[in-house]
Image 1 (spheres, rainbow, N blue to C red):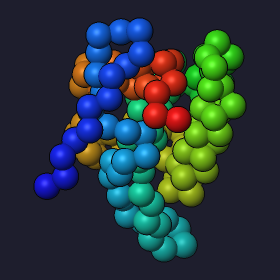
Image 2 (image 1 turned 45 degrees about the vertical axis):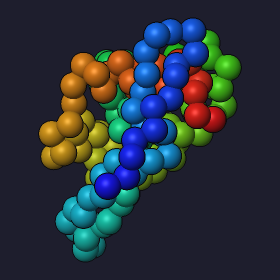
Image 3 (image 1 turned 135 degrees about the vertical axis):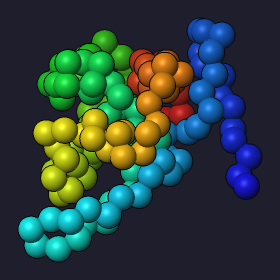
Length: 122
């Protein structure tokens, strides 16, 4: 079993238990043209959580990047996630992936916020 890496969040007393590029889940979904396989990272997972926190709006989430140092990188991550979600047919409701994996908690929301706004692991 892989040992988790604990990263200190800058300017806070909190920790996150994963790096954004670590695997989160892989899904296989049926589509009209066959099955689609897609793998998601912890960064993808956190972006889906933040999407939900930002009124299920990718645009509001993008606007939030204007106030952080790594805005270009975060916008690129959002774009990459949107492509995956469109390919799978979950663009309009990515929160359904969270329901499939049964993995949302307050701790995850805190980790997503700390990763996104404190710019760690880039």
